[in-house]
Image (cartoon, rainbow, N blue to C red; front, side, top):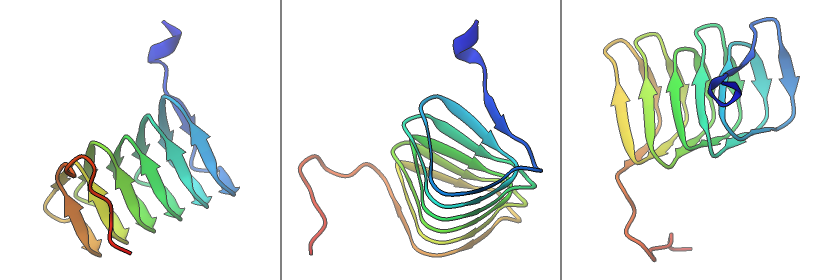
Length: 116
């Protein structure tokens, strides 16, 4: 079944610029730029992402320098490093993970908008 396949960016891949995808993506390389999707993202243990991550859900094994916004779940695994803020529906941080930033977790009430 093609729909269950995952796209993989291997650890020898370096991208400068934004990435958009619609299903599942595994990144194990270096990205400098925005990563946007309504799918789920897995950031591998060799990965380094410098930029915003805006996806439905994300699992982080590697390093992210930038803010993360996910509609559903954000998971920081034990070797993960996140330097940036998180906005997520749910957040799971394993022991050993590094997180330096602010977090906003939980469903936002419908109709609420940030104050300017």
